[in-house]
Picture 1 (cartoon, helix red, strand yellow):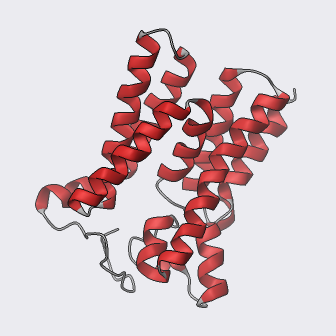
Picture 2: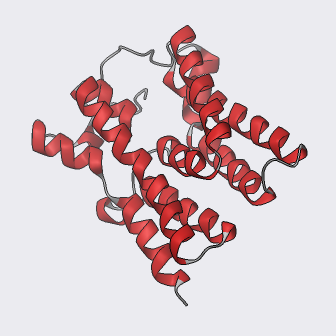
Length: 209
């Protein structure tokens, strides 16, 4: 029954609202009241600046990394690595500490994938950053980076270089990332999505992320 505390701890780890805590500590503001209302690095960048965004990015990445390492050490099963990583992502997106709200799960998903399959995770990260650099849309980089990671993992699996378990994880988080970005996708198609470098205003109705 060791899997129960591992999964529970992974969820709680993912639930740590680092962006919210940093916003309150550094500016006395609630991050959820600005921009997209999300707690991840993109909204932190728009609201608190790049230094805070780097800190939140690293913290959210470590959520996925530590969840996989925890399951690997204690349960020694790729299936439980996937379960732990997904629990961390769920915790990040729907944190028990802030009313089951949170981020979009991109960075925490990436942390899990980098720990499972560094090559596929690196492809996802590099391609996502390239898209952001070219088009200045973080949301576009996130959804395409996830897709490229999935494609690379599929190729590795087809060549016998990676396990199907990790392919399943990458497929699931890619679907989740796309679902979590459905509002961004609508704005990208309509040409109203915010670009990198645009700040976040106090929320009043729907906001760009």
